[in-house]
Image (tube, rainbow, N blue to C red; front, side, top):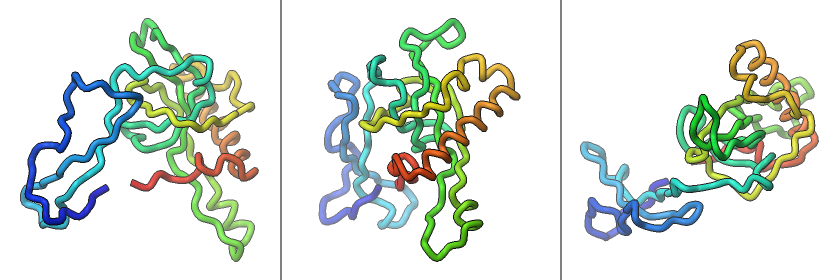
Length: 193
């Protein structure tokens, strides 16, 4: 997100230093000046940087079915639901992580003038399931209850490709049911950034 530069002189350092010693809460927003070499002036300006502390922890009692945003990787910026969490880690993954289900391709906009076929086609959701490190998740205040997913996504799901595909189908069915009901509208809208 870029903002006009204005009359302020060029600075190459952030306005507030991003030091590891700085105490951050769950997340903190800072403004930095972005100067790109060999780019025209409109590409320069202040940008908003979201800093997430490394010691971000999830409360085990409230985390299940909690909606979070993935911060890095292929699905960065996508919304996910935390299905299971492992605070201490496992033998294969010795770090705190969570099994999440999210939306890779969001449903498109639907209007009254569209026919039933077109509405059905535009209401499709492409899901993904993944194991994500806690440091790559930004928890939100939203909660999404998915009754149909109990037992369908487990740590053993990721060992067999066929089990993974079956789990994705179950997640897709649960998400599309939820979307067709019209509940949890925020979860099914794409983040614009």
